Amino acid sequence: MNGWRSAGAVAGLLCLGAVSAVAGPSLTLLTGFWLGVALCALLLAGQVGVTPLLAYLSALSVVFAGTSPDVSVRLSSLVVPFVFASVSLVAAGMSLKSPPPAKRWSFGVLALGLLVAGFSGPAGGAGRMYVFLTEWLGVAPAAAESIVFYARKGMHLGLYALLAGVAFGFARLFVPRRAAVFALAWALVHATFDETRQAMSVGRTGAVWDVLLDMVGAVLALVLAAGVASKRERAAG
Image (tube, rainbow, N blue to C red; front, top):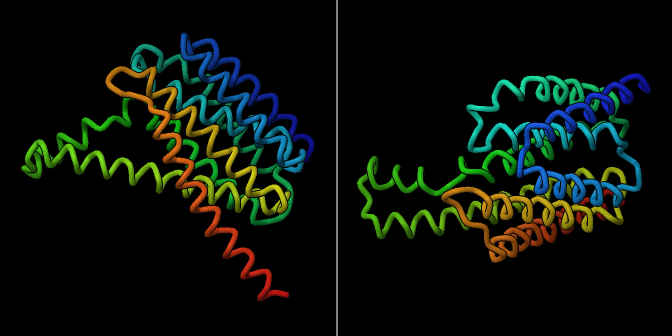
């Protein structure tokens, strides 16, 4: 087990270093995200370990770099980071300690994080939705704009509700009393990263109001999750 942890940590560090070499001006944003996630991890009181943290940061960093506007120029340069990130993820999965459900929850945490990393860039813009509605479905432009606006706001609420809920479920396995705080911090770091990257992407805009909307979704999910967890504990007791 120690061998897996060591191998995963080394591969993760090598991946972050390799991504840093190709991140360009976006490295500042990426570094801020790394720091934010690391600070969130402190709320877990060291229960998870460094290897899963580095594996998570590695995977999201590769997706971040791969969805940058100049991906066609840098695609070959991402082969090495991708290999290191893959090794780190496998090692993290092998080294993650009990309780048994931790691996299932960690998969959800990773999947939602990858969605944020992938769609926070140009690929997540509203243009495709608008074109689909107007050109494929024949919706009037004014109506299409309204549909896209409200649909995307709903997606903000839904995605960050899921993100916070899954983070809460994961953290409860390790630090039940700090699970809600961890989930809120986790959602805030990702929402801030998401909107900051949008502000830096051509054709997209980042907004503080969207961060607040994301956090509303996170709070609603946590209220529901805490209520369900409390009900289950009373039933079990």
